[in-house]
Image (cartoon, rainbow, N blue to C red):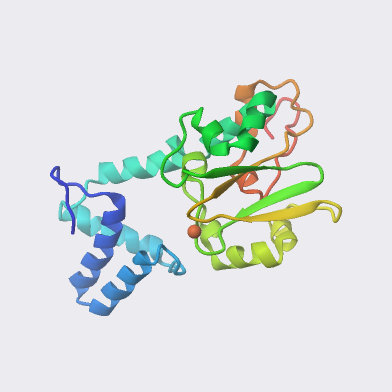
Length: 243
Ligand code: FE
């Protein structure tokens, strides 16, 4: 298992090594091989239902053996869940709503426009933003695995990586949206965008009516992760309250 000089390992190496270490710990070579195969396949395999418990157990063993630093793991998770999470995308969306010139740049070259906020890098090298309108609703999926714009949305939700969503988003997109509580009228076109390792999509949701008085900072607060994937819309905020 790779280990850096300060005694810690990266999360990717941690996950790879953790699986092999645990399997070896209990003497199951076949488990080790299967787990390694799954990870090397770029997470194309279906995630086991007990994955959370398994990771927790592995993490405990590795921390006890001083092979990983739990503070570093917490920092990585916190970074993608909070600091690099969907708040970044929300800032991009809110700015596009209030600045037509920025919106034009965003739709023309999303990677460059998003970089104006300092967001970019891994899993966000080639971004495309698609705009929802009264006549077009956009939905993002990765049919192959779980490609997702990490710098603007953070880590993908579990359902996004699930086989049912990945297949049904394409063959029954309106049905999937209905299950998210979103009924798309027949006269509105639904466009499904298949993310890949090369191109990651972000939906620019419609700015809801009744938000004309809101500041950009307030608008950031009503933009949801799911609206930027396209499985929900942003509802109009109630007077004096949140959306
Ligand atoms: Fe993928």
